[in-house]
Image (cartoon, rainbow, N blue to C red; front, side):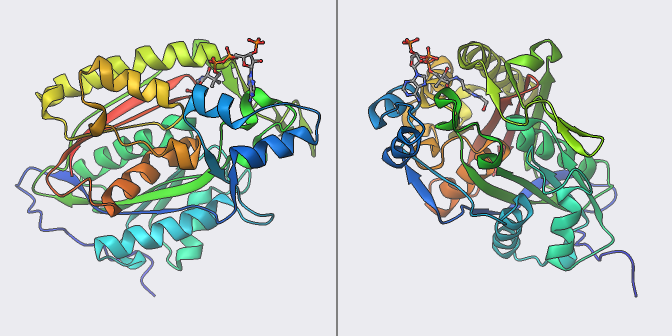
Length: 340
Ligand code: UT7
């Protein structure tokens, strides 16, 4: 038995410059869709009031998807990964690195990436989770890019998968209407051509408290509150500033300008933040990919979900220049600029 997976060398000679390029995308949404009216009915049972009008006006969200009992992040990741592998013309045996960005892992440990590897029916390749909340996928893509450029991986499966419905406080109308479940994945391969042009990652731990799930597991019990807490206005203000600075920094690093962008795919949390980011870059709004209306905020899954939707709908095409941006708890933020 060969303990190591065979991985594609992706046409890269040892002398040639080495880049990482997205070879395929995939995504998955659990089938149970809740409209804003469904959420209003759910909250009414608890004596809380919300409305489709409030949610759409403040966030752009019209619906979200929630998993059923017994379905975990690794299950959503498996569907998205299979779709990405198929789109890339690869099999799980080709993969030599798995990174799963998630804040809602199946277990405390082992990692959801190891559980995904087992579900994919392969073994031996490196697999780990990356925790950067809503910036998780952008962080994971930047890490996989670095590992491929360094020659320590040739074919990476990079996944964002979340079941945020498990950590929502359905007695808090200011947060529970905002989030949803889902997964997105890309196959990132070594390539002689870019690919990923530049990445930017940042964090500021001074803002730990504005978006967190403060509980933990200790002594056989959950200690503290295991449900999501957010100071929405504080997050909003920070997000607007850092998304703009990350976008400008990653463009400068790559020697490109905003006019070179075909598509902007920011974290899908609030349409007002997303449109504000596009406007600051003087991008026409038809270059903004928005899926927040149908997905809600799926945290680490939001960017790869939106990317896959844009690819499958024929908007993002081979050769297009795309900027991906993440922002969220930590506080974390970052951007990836790539030629698709
Ligand atoms: O994923 C990480 C990134 N996360 C984000 O980017 C989220 C950033 N923050 C936001 O998107 C926005 O701050 C929210 C959507 C969370 C809130 O929007 P807002 O315009 O900042 O509203 P607000 O918090 O100022 O609340 C306005 C009013 C309040 O009532 P009063 O005090 O004016 O009487 C809230 O109690 O809206 C009320 N409210 C609601 N009303 C109906 C709050 N939640 C709801 C609700 N339904 N679900």
